Amino acid sequence: MGSNLFNKIKLLKQIRPEADFALSSRRIILTTTRKPHYQFLFKKQIQQTLILSAAMGMAVVLLLIVGRVSNLPLEGLSPNLISSLNSKELTQEQESINFNIHLAEAKYYKESTTQVTMALNNDLDSVAMQKQAENINSLIKELAL
Amino acid sequence: MKKIVFILMIFVLGPFVVRGQTTINIKTALQGIVDNLEQLSRRLTGNEELKIRKASLKNVIDLALAESNDLKNKLIKIAYLEGDYLDLRDTLLKELGNHSSYYDSISMALEKENSLSKIKNISTQLKDWRRIVYHPTLEKIVNFLLVFEGRDALQLAETRFNNISNDLKKVNNLEVIKNSPLNNLLAKAEESLNEARELQKASALIILKSDENDTQKLIEEELDKIKETYSYFLEMSDWLKKASKK
Image (tube, rainbow over all chains, first blue to last red; front, side, top):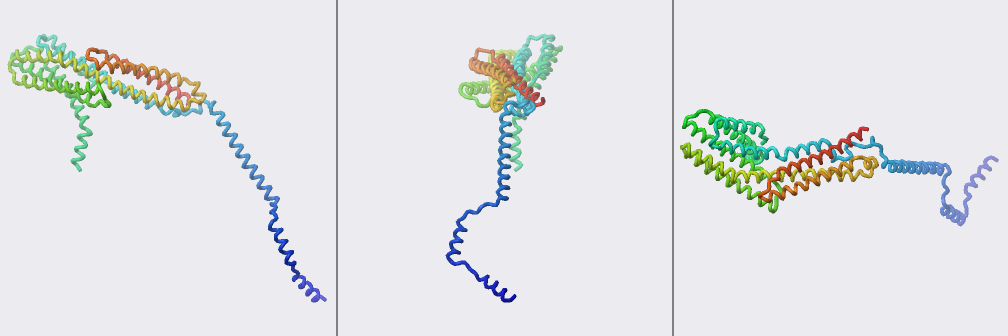
């Protein structure tokens, strides 16, 4: 009895669909869109929402920064904000101008001509000569050349 | 290789050596004149006086030559000259060359003379020549140098002004800058700079005319205006420094 049933079950394994049915069923399966898995869909939606929120958050932050730039507080200023106002460079430049305009030399040339003309005077007495020597001496001390 | 380095050193260091020598020569020649005057003021024999007067004249000629070299070097150093100014510089250099020739001839005459009266004559000749020829040329040269030193100083200040002005434009949309004294100070600096520019123009015109002599005063005023410009720049710099520390 037992072996008889076993043989019958074996016969059931040989059951096959008809060829036409198999073909039409395959077509239906292949042309039907796959429905997403509900769990996966839920995860993806959360992810998208998070990205969108982050982007919106960034946009808001940027808008706030741009909006507040025109009202930046003083502590936001850097001393190098206007690099051409570097005080060290400005001072050096001002000093170089003083140094390069030789007004002292012009003064020397003006005075030396007078002193030398006097020294060439043949009629100077001894007191005048001493005085002249002192004048030229003070000129040497002031000489900026 | 050593030769090349040596030649390069001469070219690089040459101007400094020449300048150094010129400075020493002017001072040395002046000191020589002082020493001779002090000796002449004492009681001297005829021969002593002759010797000291000759030495004194020689010192005056040395001084004149040293000054002449100094001025020549400075004239040659002026860059970017054109038109009438280039011609004027050439004329002045030529006149300095003539002066050197005159001093050489006086120097030769001096060496030959052994009579006190003739030495005194040479002294008088030199004095007159300096008054008539040397002094007017010297004045022109000194004024010429001052004008172009003023021009260079003005250009430096103008470049600085333009840089500050451009930098300020970039940050002028900031409310804190708009409400700051920076723009007002820059406007004041521009005003001083414009005045300096006008003084520079006036002094540059004057040196082309031979009979005017206000150049030095104009350059002094120009320098004051440039200094004023920088005082505004420094005030701006100070404000920025203080503002960033608040």
